[in-house]
Image (cartoon, rainbow, N blue to C red; front, side, top):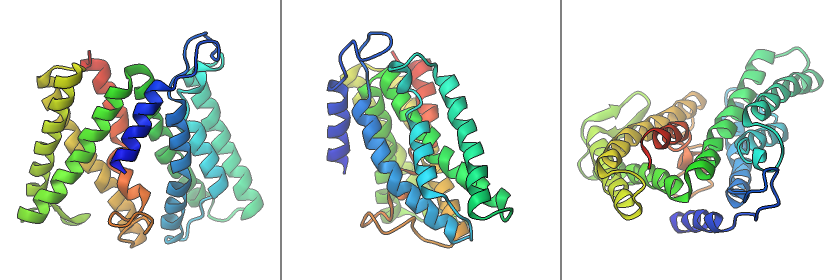
Length: 274
């Protein structure tokens, strides 16, 4: 998976649509990335639907998928059309809310409106708006910035799992994720720092000191994102989001640490990137 996604991101960095396709007559970026995200949103929404169903909630899957894709590509379309991202985002959000009311009315009537509409809006924004920051980071800060962010966070996961398996004794969050330990967290930070400093040294995208801070900050944010998804699974009384990815669970279990961290990564590169 690492090789595949890295190859796709690097290829995306080279396959910009030429000037003339866009409203501003500049190369259109992140087309391949948007396609990849749109493809991944489908199974991830199905996994979220299964978690919701375990609590008696209904996710309107086709509608949720379409709205999630529309939100995830928020910062792509202004390259092609004369529309700003904030206006596009507002239009999609309003359409999602009104569409949910209509679907709820025709499918179920005045039953479980708050719970079902709330669950659908949560799914749409969690798996739509948050991935949109991958696209924004790619367009405004480049492929290396996006790769550095993803690699740092996933190296935290790898380091935490390895160190926690070998030396873990002190629980990090026993009520939510009993397998996580402070020893694992330390191992995750070490591997994240190595990855981030290497990226900074090779690419010059930020100073090595900023890279160390980046690694420590996003090691913790990534683990908090993992715990956030664990809350959903605990509520649904399921160990994994699905069995679709052997050894991991579901796709949601693979990307959970990245989703809440993406907006903060964009902010970090705006403030401290070169």
